[in-house]
Structures are given as C-alpha cells and as structure tokens.
Length: 501
Image 1 (cartoon, rainbow, N blue to C red):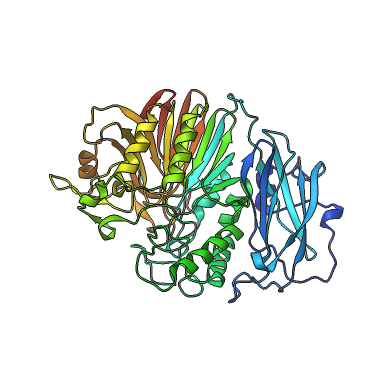
Image 2 (tube, rainbow, N blue to C red; image 1 turned 180 degrees about the vertical axis):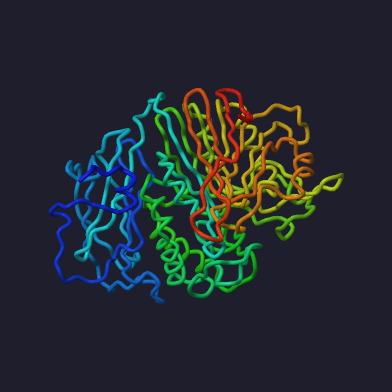
C-alpha cells in the first residue's frame, strides 16, 4: 500500500487502526456529523473542538442527543497515523452546552504540527490537523494565514472553504458572518438562492444551535476547519443584522435574551477558550500579533438610523466602535508591541469610503465611517506602530486600501494598510467589477483594488514583507469551481502601502 499524503488523509478523514479506534459492531448513529476544529493557538497549547450531533437538524437544537452527559475521549499525536501519541484524555459533553467539547490543551511544544481526533458512543471522529505558535521572540518563522468572512448558506456552495483548505495555511482567521440568521428565502442573492436553510429566522437557543449545525454539516467547511487552527470573531449575522450593543437593527421583543442565546450557540460551535470576552490576541512569535476585535458588542448605536447617507452625527467625538475598555486594551497592546507586524482582525470597512462621486458625500454608517472619532484615535496610534495592518470582512468584495493620515488629502502620509476579503458566498456568483468601479476609485484614491468575485485572502508574513493573494472562484451557484489569484500585493517592512506585483 502506498503511503498517504497529509492532504489525502485529512480529506478522507482516515484515522488509522489502533486500540483507540476499535468500536463495537452494534452502535448508535455517528455523533460526529459536525466535524472537528481547533483554534486560538498558543506556544504551548491550542483548543480542540467537536460537538456531538447524530441528528444535527433536530428541531429542538439538541442534535439528536439524549439529555444526559456523554464521555468523549480525545487524542493528540505528532503524526497523522497516531503512532506517536503526545497527549490523551477524556472530557464530558454536557446537554446544557449543546454536547459541545472544548479541550484547552497546555504543555505542548512551540512551533509544532499536531493531529487530533475524538471518540464517543463507539464512533471515531475524522482527523484534524493543528499547530502551536512559535516560541515568544521567534522572528524568522514565516506564517501563511488565510482569512475569510460572509458565508451565506443559501447564496452558494462553500467551494472557497475547500480551496482554502487545499492551500494548507498555518492559521485561519474568520472575521464574521459565519452564519446568517434569516429564514429561507428572505435574503436572496442577485444570482438567486441555490440552497435553503432549515427553520425560521433564528431567535432562540434551539434555532441558533440548529443553524450553526446546518452550516457545520457542509463538507467544504469541515475541510477548512480540519486543516489548521482558527481564530474566530463574530460580526452581525451570527446574531441579527446590524445589531449594536443591546440594540437590534429593528424593534423586536427582548433582544437581550435573543443576543444571549446567539452568544451561547456561538461559543458551543466554535473552537474558543472559555473567557469572559471575545476580543483577544493571538501571537506568532515576534513576527506578528493578531488583535481580534469585537466591533458589535460595545459600539455606540449607529448614527442617523443606519444605512448609506449624509449624517453630521457621525462626527460626534463620543462615538466609539470598540467601547472604552476595548479601545484602551487595543491602544495599550499596540503601544507595548514588539511584533514586526501588528494586525487588526475586525469586521467592517475601516478606511473612509465615499459612495457618491462629486461634491455630495455619503458614507456607510454601520462601518467606521459612522464612528469617525474612534477611528481617528486609532489611526493616531498607528503612527507609533512599526507595521500596522487592518484585516476586514463584511462587504462581500475584495478591496485593498491605504490608511491615510488625512483621508481627504491623497498626498498625506500612509500610516497602515487595509486588506478586505471578499465573501465566501454572500452576494452569489459576483463579477470581476461593477460598472461604477472606475468612478468609485477616482472618488477614493487611497483605495487601490476592488474585485467582486467570491473567495478568500491568503497572506504570507516574513520579517521583510507581507504578501497578499486575493483568491477568487468563478462561481458559487454550482459546486466545484477552481480558484484563481485575482491580484497580488506586497507590503514592505516599515513602508505601509500596497505594491502590486
């Protein structure tokens, strides 16, 4: 028998034949229908995740599991055949947490690749690959990182997730809109919806659990989770469109209870550490620090009723996207950073963007243009950071922009670079550009790139440069599209700005 490559092993979900995989001949339905995942890597550990759900679309959101705790065994190995077991143990999947499992490992070696799997109810999960980050101070260990956002299940097939997995990144960041809350047929793509979601608009814990489970059953998404550790952060659609703090976009009964249900389901279905807050940092030695931001839970309500419009209120000095505590945490982290690259993983368009050519200015008030004072404070901090980079999702297209000292002066100093990833599916097939693209770019000369295909973004960090490949698929309304690099840019050390190659 010829040896298996790492990729074929992961894609096939092969786990090897050991005592751990022995199972009884008569057993219940497979509880590992949602796959496996890992996340929030550190030099000495990582989070391993799975959730037991033999009937993932069960109406009650419990995934077909009994209302009792279930023991789950886990293994971590230094090789994909599990001949070198590094750690093993067992934990309890509890009904009050949706029978999810979060194993927070410690005691591992820095900068190492590992493989993991679970066993429960006489079934063995597929194998996942993960890794720890380099030891603190390590600079010369390069990093390949992919980031993505906006996967609307109805708008298309998750081919881009599979192509991302095939690129085998070291780390994946998901910047929000991992799921969408709408009932089937409410949110329709220009190219039409090609799949449907089960159940009504998500407002209850059962509904959010069921929606998260339906997404997790997608085989392309499972491949992306199994290939590398993820760092995740939510945006709005995991809860409700354009929510802000304790306020919904539209009046509704008891939104705080709905939000709490969505928060719980999000934790249950993501490879997250148990923590009191979602904003956090992931370091990659001294090469890069990723500051993952929560731009929803602490923000001031959107000005002028939200939307795209003229709005003097957006300039009010007290307006904040991050809230006082998170803003201070970020400022302190940037001030004290010794990383070569400081990277903000966040959700909404950061750079100023005027959507209307000419003398009249109109801005998207759900984005940072609606929180000008908070953005100004952050941009001022960038002046003292060696290489600040902003990563963005949300807007369903790929963009590249230069963060200016003064937005309305193209000749002013460039202080940072913004990389905006397109959506996985939201918006349907898309196109190479819009008819308005040329006029948009003339109106906003700090914006250097736009593409309207679906896909994801690949980055490679070294001490000398950040290389960015905007990756796009030709279609999502049918499966199997190839992926192509639409454009490549390089950002040089101590030289913010986009250089197209």
